[in-house]
Image (cartoon, rainbow, N blue to C red; front, side, top):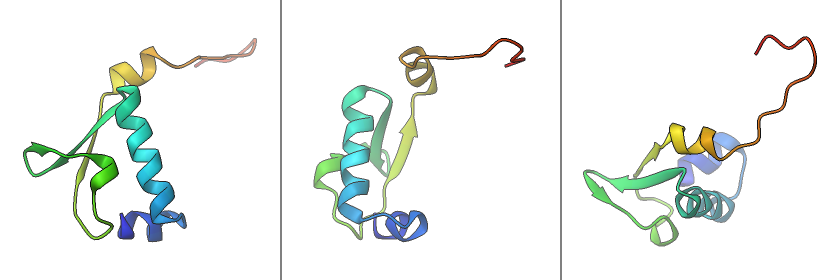
Length: 71
């Protein structure tokens, strides 16, 4: 989290909160190696993998468009 905080200019505690929210919402999971990890219990120096569930993420978001959008 230290490296992610430095790269984004955010506080490590805020990064931890954001990761926990992504996991709680079902949008992602956090892993250490092949094992699941608790985002709220990670030490700031520990390496972890953030695995997004993009299908879940997109399914639970509001999509807006304006007339003429090609998206």
